[in-house]
Length: 356
Image 1 (tube, one colour):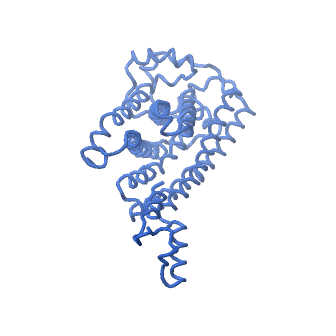
Image 2 (cartoon, one colour):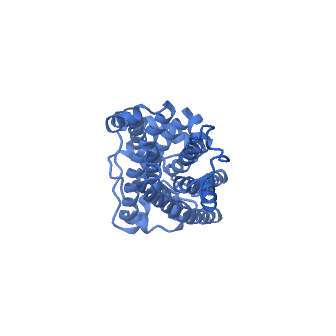
Image 3 (spheres, one colour):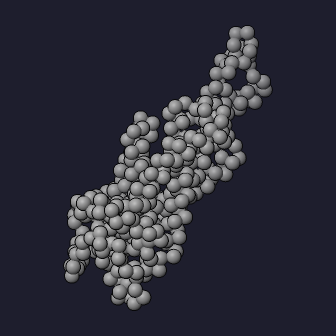
């Protein structure tokens, strides 16, 4: 299936060719415009559109946010837009790309289709932006998100070799849980902590995260390991290693109706079909890192959602003790002031624990 977007301008292909040669990314010039477009699009949302719309829709809440929280808000807006767009595109490619459906083990490792390349381009552009923001604000987002940005950019960039181009739309479906994660964060900032909408969204968040990242992601990771291992065990030398010239790019032929010609189109950038040891190790290590982060974050999500809807233990224990005694004791209750008025310490602690 061809890339539905037109090829980039010839000058942009020529400009990106040295980088493509240096990184051994022969299909990068085909999708450099999508990488740059995605990067610029998400940068503009973060810097201009997110603040503008947020001030218009939530003027009081957004303007009163602390500077660090406002940065986090804008990044969540970008994440919400990106995850929604890329999920729709990836699902469309997975169902509409007939050549992708017919791929065997060898083709899943080495084959290339323009539609999957488009997904890789948009994903690489977003994770390049994400890497920039994570480096600039590591004190806000932490080292875990920085490691995630680096690993995701590496994994999706390898599709330009092309290496495991087939799995680009597959692994981007991790993002199916991201809209719910962003909504959960926004509910807290909109003073809707513990509300029914946040409860329903929290259930959807845990369900999609578990299914898409832990179940689907782990299963597809095993398939990747199997495919890469088979490629390492059975390297196939191709007849020719085709270098991508700008002049050739502007005259790429459409996929032929015959199976042999279609296979030639998909495998035209395969090269020697020998998996370098460093490439296999790098890809698999980054994949393991991403899966490890997913399991870690899932545990944190369960803990966070429970805090929103589970009453604090000190409140529950106190109420139970008071019910057992028949009435609360004013003399021995530490949360009462000497004049008999009720202290707000416990209430403040409860609110803070729910919003932590």
